Image (cartoon, rainbow, N blue to C red; front, top):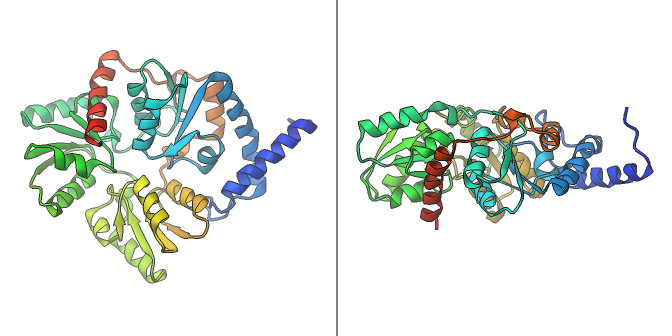
Length: 348
């Protein structure tokens, strides 16, 4: 059993209280708030991880859907996939540790081919990224010659390499509207494709969307009934939904947007209670950052995101295993990078 000396104990106490100041308003999955003893347990890891970052010139990017002890304990930057992709471009670090799922770490590698990119959770999947292959995208291209392919960022490096423009939940509507073609292939989110058609029609933009793929294992579970229950139980509540949800849910919500857009909405709103129809990690972030407001999450837990822990983050920094380090063929990086660069250009 490890017994800290007086200096180590002082550092541990300081770190635990730092974490408690950030996390005391944050809920565990069982509904209980983070306690000081919880923060002491986390502090054993966060102290060492933050030291290792400096020693190895590493940067930690943590998606909002991961656990709060990563987001607030060790992450240099946290947010949605688009924001973190931009941070990956700008970093001067030698090592990028991406606490998220595999396609996100691949994206960081595509944008930084000369850097080491590691992911604590290893090959953590995503029901969207796993819903379509690069071979299927090639078949779609062959079946619809001349029709450009937009791929949602929740896709593999191989799919990005076969696509013309990558998009995120924050820029998909604007980029699709800018495309001059009357037809677009959109992969791999079938629900977002339906929401895209609806939004384009609202804007008076006529396009045919040819969709293929699947749906998010979190967002596809939300139903209109959940919105009704929230409104009945919490009069005056503002309901926020992600565009990966069913169109009927989006139509019933007060606001539809990406993780970052929902965060911005909360920041600018005078309302005090929100129903958040997305992954629980965003609810945790909102609880931590807007302590004067109340957030009602539903049941959106991404088991893939939660595979990132303080323990495997520390181990990945110390000595990453082969399945924690991203390696991609040079030709895939080159082709996939074009679709990401096109996104950056069209998002300006």
